[in-house]
Image (cartoon, rainbow, N blue to C red; front, side, top):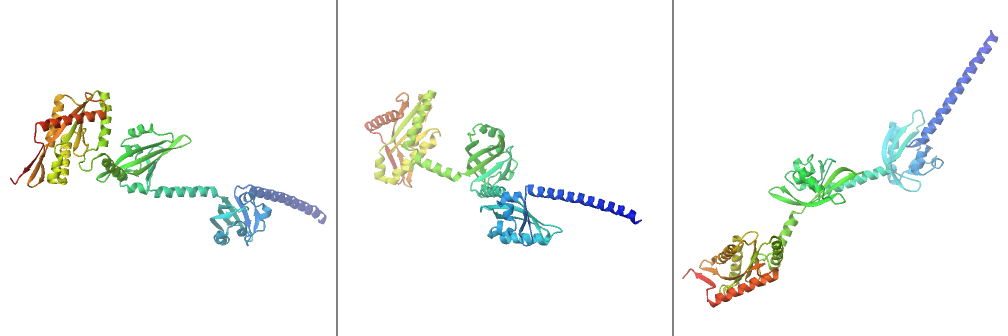
Length: 442
């Protein structure tokens, strides 16, 4: 029996050896797979002991932090790759992993060459070990810088002084910043989801029309009026089409409120072109208007009448009643002329007591006579100086026609001036009354 037991024991031992060899081979294979996975992982893998010293360090960690595995092994991870200002934070994160089994963080790190990078970490306590922690890291420096840049731009967009909104690829408005709502436009509540063309131009067709006038940078600039309260706001508008790989992705609109500027410019422009005393246009504006009127008349074969008006005995008004009375006289004459003529006609204070009236599109001799009578009637309107004194002004009026008497502005004015002097000579020779004052006390 003992003899038979020996072969059985040998057989069992042989099976045990064979099984051990198989297990050992599998263990070696698993270790090779582990090391292959460990080293080839796209994530930096670092194993540290209880004292935070590096036990293992894969190729990705070498690539990210710059140290080869042999340089990093045995070094304390906090001293090797963590900057001083972030060490307390990282220490807390590692302690949390040791006590709770897992922790997450985003913190700054330092490479071998002293460069500062930003990494995302996942730290896990290894089971069955002696307190080792597997630290997994990804370098997110580029994505974080991109995110920071986006945050900066978002903050700049939100806090910009100009009103800004943008659309989706179909032109439907998706976002507007604080400055836009500060404009207090009447239709702001219906902003989101409205097409940019319908919002800014009342209809999409109008927007489609301006698309053809975008410049090479896909930008359009113009001025629009939008209702706000009881008034309209004048807005300087810039619209830019945003493309990605030749595909339209958005429109961005920038609105700048120029209402006050426009109003101020209108006031300045009025001051530049008008006489401050009478409100009639000044000599410079008159010359410019006459030049353009002659250009139009030349194209359309129309006539222009120029009436040169000189107040008779204006000096006597100043001498008898004072310069304030003279100013009142000029103001009333200008006001009466402006009120009885068309908006397209021009009344100019050409000199001290001289006016020029320009009439375009003269129809006939009867038309000319009607205008002359109208001018005379406007000038002769009674002017109440005070409760007891009324002035009735008189004037000499000369007329010249384009192109009958002259074909350029300077010559036409001279012709009207000469005609006025002939009229004044006639009145003096006839000893006609040229200025009357009625005293109600007599």
